[in-house]
Image (cartoon, rainbow, N blue to C red; front, side, top):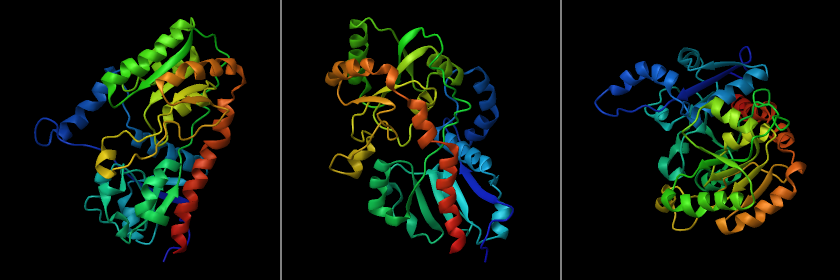
Amino acid sequence: MTHSLIDNTILLFYGGFEKDSFFRNDRYLKRVIRPFYQLFSHRQKVSGFLVWHRLLVKALTEAGYRVKVDDYRFASRRPDYPIGITGYPSILSNWKLPNPAILGPGMFDHPSQCAGLMDDPRYKKYIVTCDWMRKLFEEDFGDACVDWRAGIDVSQWKDVSGEEKKIDFLIYDKIRWDRDRLEGELLGRVQSELASRGLTSQVLRYGFYDYKAYADALKNSRAMIFLCEHETQGMAYQECLASNIPILAWDFGIWKDPLAQVCSDKPIHASSVPYFSPQCGEKFRRGDDFGEVLDRFQSRLFSYQPRTYVENSLSFEISAQMYLKQYLSLLER
């Protein structure tokens, strides 16, 4: 039985999401044409699950570990060696390897989607990426739930607070549900309040920009208004914080995914900014609250220290330590 790492090797497996769209097996054709599409598209090209996976690999690598991805031969030859399985749950379909496994980051939105999952003796740990997600999953998975969060690369997302600013607020629009109503009641209200104070703004809608457009928008903005129902981590707003740009966040407080109504007859708590502190900025719950909170935010604008929060709470070092604690514990079994 394996009781130690071999050459500091961590085994990770990533499951992407592919399905046929127009005809049988067209997912294979999409693999061929996708790189050409991405060359000319200005939309986001990488899923959140893949971002998590890549950041986990980078954190572990920077911590001095050799990360092998999708090395089925290495794992099958060492059935007691721990593995991590990340990405979409389709990877678990007909999973053959006997190795003890950590599931996540990624996988499922609610434990009802995978009843009995942790009854499989191979699956030892299930990653949850924030407090409200833990409360959601631990009712079914109990002690199998373990905490982890991705690290934010502060060498990539540099402090741009000292750059010449062209606009007062970047409005990050990630409104996903009940959009027809909220475009007026929330986004429209925010824009109206800003205009009434003579404050300029730019709207950047989730899914309709690329990395450079986002980085340029942050460089040109004094602050961000983050409009999203909920996040299980929220990489984009944390990249903003790393850039030392404070945030005024809409934090509605309830899980609005339509799945919530199927899973529970009671409101399920959630947060749009699960990693946040007074260093980062301010939060408001309803459009009616926005004007008052905006005034408070403006009065404190130059006292916030969001990058310091990221450095102390969302570093690669912390991310790697959290994962390694759980991974190495599987060697002791």
